[in-house]
Length: 153
Length: 153
DNA sequence: ATTGAAATTACCGTTGA
DNA sequence: TCAACGGTAATTTCAAT
Image 1 (spheres, rainbow over the protein chains, first blue to last red):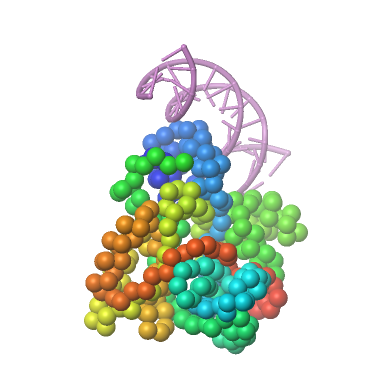
Image 2 (cartoon, each protein chain N blue to C red):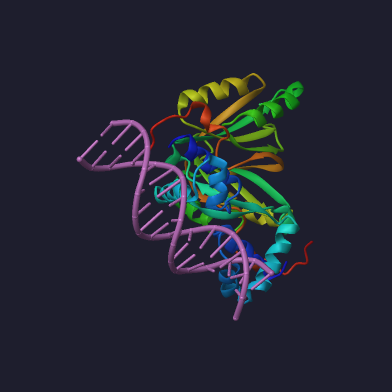
């Protein structure tokens, strides 16, 4: 995990379709050298895949909310199952503290949010925060180079 | 925004490197037809780009936390500026409710989390939840097809 | 179907442990 | 001396048109 690999990760995070030749230009390496590094990053699980970035507003899903869920003691497993089955749940974090789960949900309309919350309320006490804007959104921290000359993996 | 476009979005979300030919097979369309659809999705801003998916643990960043920040009335702008400058902040949502901002942060060590929280505390009251696991994480809702034959864009 | 580009392979040189 | 890494070049595959 040297500085070059961090650069590659950051470059691929920003544009997952850069070619090895292009990456090579940017990190001052040959295409095969880059290919080998990327292959190892993929093999080690550091890179788990490549995906399109989607603007939910532009596809007709204008509403997103954060939902904190204080799950009833006996309903933990049931809750997890429910959450994983709900299409509208974009992310679900299991966290420390009284609110065991924090969900990010995306819906077409407030009425759909309503029915969603109804289902969650059967198994938990919820606290809902509507997302007004998202000034920061990325896959990994910026400027790792600063503290990083570590031996990893 | 017909059913085929939803399928394309979902396929590209899962694998941003699928070729037009491969996509064509999966949605029963010719490669050029798919290319044209994807081009329009990109042009309209529905697809904003393509990126690598990164496993933070595997790259030596094992700790992530959610931080709710109740920003002091007079410090809103200053807070936003600070947050956008912090490398460790992966996402920042501006939300309704007393906690104006919810951050997701990723760090190498608890001591780094400590210094990060120190800086936030100057401008806000914070509540920190350590992320134990993330059972769900995706870019867009699953199974949009259900309610969706809408005319969008 | 053709053209061009990118991925991959093979081979060799350098370096550092 | 050997293992790891990078460069060059040739080949093959494959995607875009």
